[in-house]
Image 1 (cartoon, one colour):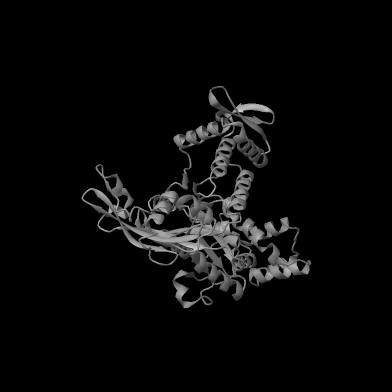
Image 2 (image 1 turned 120 degrees about the vertical axis):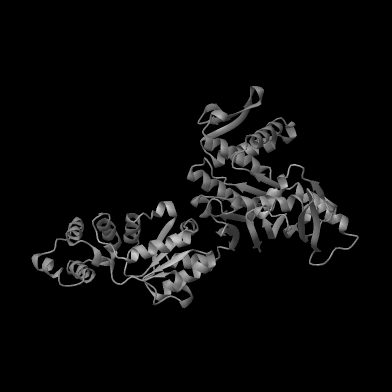
Length: 493
C-alpha cells in the first residue's frame, strides 16, 4: 500500500498542500512551528478515514475538541482532504479476495455543523474511472484494510512504547514454530547495533539487553539503545504498512541514525512499507531519500514544497559545493559576489546583533554568472529565502528587492595593522617597500601581489584571513551591513 498523491486544505496551520508523485521514503523538514507534525497528522487522518465520506460519517463534538482541526478554528469553511493510494495484488487479495492492482483516488470534505463533524464524499475514482455499484463494496473493504495499515510513531509517548514492548512479549511467547520470527528480530538488532549481543525477557516480562555480554534491563540502558530497539521492532512488524515517524533520530547517536535510515531505505526500495519522517537531523536529510517535503510558513500559514533529489539536483549541489541538509536547515541564504567572503559577512553580522546560529543564516559565494544562475534555480526549486549581496547589477530585475549593494572589496575595510598581524601568521612578512605600497593601492590588489611574489594564490587563503581579521571588534565595517541586517529582519517578520 502506498500513498501516491496527497492534498489537504484548511487543516490546522495548513492552508493548501498538494503533494504529487510521493516516493517510498519521504522526509519532511522545516523550522519548529512550520507544520511538519500537522502534515503528518493530516496524512494519518486521511488514511484512517478514507471511507468516512462514502459512509457519510458524523461525530458529535460535545467538548468542542474537533474545532482544533480547523485552520484558525474557523469552522465556516470545510476541511478538504484526499489523495491517491495504490494497493498491490497481495493487499487486494487479503482485502477483497481478488489479486489485482488498484489505484483509488478519494477526496473527502469535513464540515462542522451544530457541534457535529460531518464527512461527505467529494471525489472517488477507481483506476481512473468512477466506481460501479458492483465494486463499491470492494472499495469499502480496501478502505477498511487501509485504516488498519497505517502506524503513527510519536517522538515519545510512554503508553505507545509500552504497547510496543507488550507486542514484543507476545512474539517472544509465540509457539516454537513461530519462534524463528523472534530470533530473526534479535539478529536484526545485533546487525544494527553490534554492541547488543542478544535480547531476552526475564522475570515479570522485563526486556533485557545483552550489551557487550552484560545483561541490562532496557529501562536502565542508554536511551539511544532503547529508542533503536523499539524502532527496529516497529519497522520489523510493519510490512505493507504506511509508517509516519515523528523525529526518529531523538536520543540516537549519528551512526545509529545512519544505520536506521539505511535499513529504512533498503526496505522501502523493496516495497516492504512506505515511510514519512519528520526530522531536524542532517544525518536523516543526507540519507538516500526519495522525496523531500519542505514546509514553509508565511503570515502564519503553512504550505509545502516537494522535491525529488534527482541526478540534476545532485549535480547542481556538487557544482555549488553545497549540501542538501545545510540548505534545508538554513532559514536565510546570503549569496555574495567576489567582493566579499562568507566568513567576513558572518562576523560583521554578529557585531551588529545578527547571529547566524540563532537565525539560521548561511553565506555562499557566486563567483561567476553560471553559479549565480544555478543558485537562482536552487532558490526557486527549494523555496529558499535568498538575499543577494553585491550582485544587484547581475540578478534578474524581479529579484532586486532581495538585493543589497556592496561598493568595494571587503579588504578595504580592514585595519592595516590587524591585517599585517594576521598575514604574518601565514608566514607572509612584507618588506618595507611593500608596507609603504599598502597605503597607496587598494588592499585587495596589494594582498594579491604580495602573495603572488611569494608563490601563493591569495584567493585560496582569503576566507581564512578575512575571518581572523574581522574577529577583531575594532575593524571598520561597510554601511551596507546595516542594510543587509534590516533586509534579514524584514524576512523574519
